[in-house]
Image (tube, helix red, strand yellow):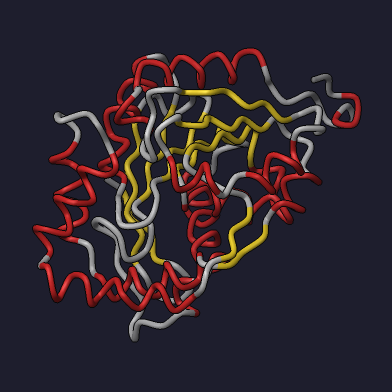
Length: 277
């Protein structure tokens, strides 16, 4: 594991798998998870010869958190800047970015000014726009207080993945997660719109839609309506996948990602506008 210190003093820890001079990949987790959710995938892709970076977002896993806790300390731009710092630390070229939920949102944020840092973008469990009441995030600490971390973790794991072997990982991460961090992050995620960033982007974009990710799928209407006509956008169905599709349908997800990276390589500079569907 490696660690950097952000410009606001937060330690960010990330895993670094595979050959140092290989094509780089970022695997970025979602809210209340950590890089551990994606470690098996990281080792798999490293075994194929990729260099795989797996960060713990601020307030998650083994990374630190800002003091004092505040909404500003967990804003989408702030958390995205942390990941730029990780890329700067390893000094790699454009990366294949794979984001689950929040991990995809942060990449969409980066597209506005830092598209050149990303070779391809793949997301699962990510809506490009969301509009929910912010007050709902206040119930996260209340739920932990009333039900306890273990029960919350068990319920979350059961609702997240159908794979019994994967549930202990989710249970562990959710039980260790600070609900106050969850309150601030979820409050910031309640309402955002990054569709314009995605539509303006020229790089290849893949959406892996889990057939059992019911809540996110219900919110995908505006995203799909905006993206279907984009020649660089591909939608692939993963029928057995839930919100964390890498845990439910790992073989399918990995195969689709490798195919995407090989078949949808970004074109050379100056040829982006002519990139075919």
